[in-house]
Amino acid sequence: MNDRKSLQAEEKRAAAEAALKLVEDGMALGLGTGSTAAYAIRGLGRMVGQGLKVRAVPTSRQTEELAREEGIPLTDLEACPRLDLTIDGADEADPRCRLIKGGGGALLREKIVASASRRMVAIVDSSKLVDPLGEFPLPVEVVQFAWPVLLPRLALLGCAPVLRRQGDKPFLTDEGNYIIDCPFKAIDDPRALAAQISPIPGVVEHGLFIDLCQEVILARSNSIERFMAD
Image (cartoon, rainbow, N blue to C red; front, side, top):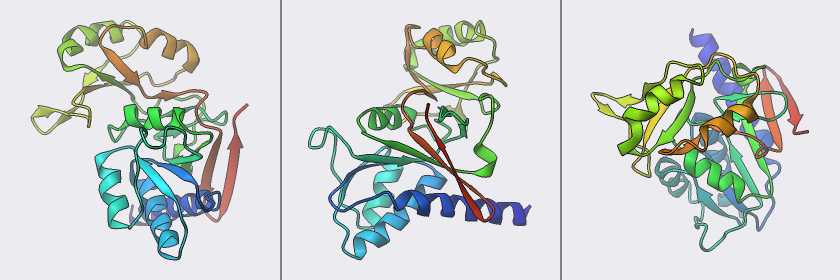
């Protein structure tokens, strides 16, 4: 178990380092959330310490705190509405650069930042590449008022939805919303599923990232693999 965790950590670090080679002086960056993105943030902090000039928009309070610790200059979408590059992780990625995100609860801000970016790169370890998507439960962010009626509506799409909890209370996102996790097991048509979920009243956002990620950088043992969007 420890060997597997150690290998996974090395793969995450390697994928992050490969993505950081895309960063250029003067860029406006989006910084993702999660354990793999954290490797990129720490690496970027070292680059800033060596003189790199960038500014970055964090996708969560957790990311903001880490970026500040690393000395990375931060901005927001009001001051910088168009970003050059976003580096983020993923809970799942397929070879067509479609993703499931939101395991850390930051999917709404992550999707907003990705949509504001000229390029999004997802960094993943070898366990995250799947085809089809869906083994990881799809997070759906919802307004608090709506969750009781959304559980049966989401179930009609072919899953057994569960309200995410943190201890004995519902998990709260940075925007004060709830998350319903939807275990579909296999999503044969992510675009069609996204089109079914998005219009449901009370749904704020879902964790299917389609047409947002241009490249997946995957680290496998001692190699780097790259997948480009169609």
